[in-house]
Length: 191
Image (cartoon, rainbow, N blue to C red; front, side, top):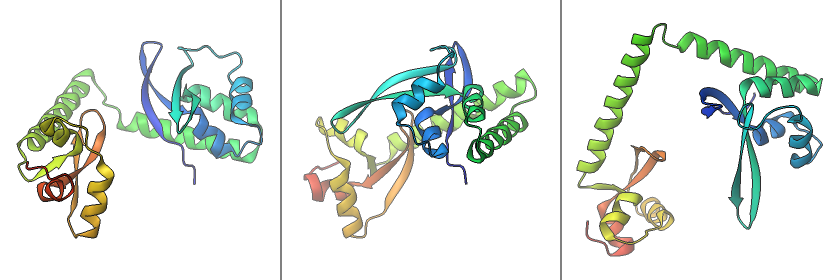
């Protein structure tokens, strides 16, 4: 099974399907270290057109990450000239077909879909803001006017039989919410 996440990314002013080059490297099971793999395989491609770069801090080191367009990723796997590369390329082609099948046929359909998603997002935001029993760490931190850590909340919830609910956050996607009694027990915080 191919385990490479495809995400929408704005590259060269257009929203395109893209993948993390490090994930591609891992899936290809390359014998090269990542920096050499990236340098060799991105040769001839243009930054901010075919790929983006950013630094990612992991523990005490900073890693250079590359987000490549799906077209660039297909080219890279084709150059590998091995069975794994062929499998990944077929996977990418299949994903593109799925994207096309799920794409709105008209501009009006695209707008309607966007409006519907915005309405859902707004309802989830209202639901989150109006909850008096369940709080995200972000919301509780704001109310408490201090930074709260999620790990003690999670540990306490699991150890004492409290549910951990999921909700949507505009910045982070799906996040955990913890019951107000958990905040009281862990942080002596009255919400």
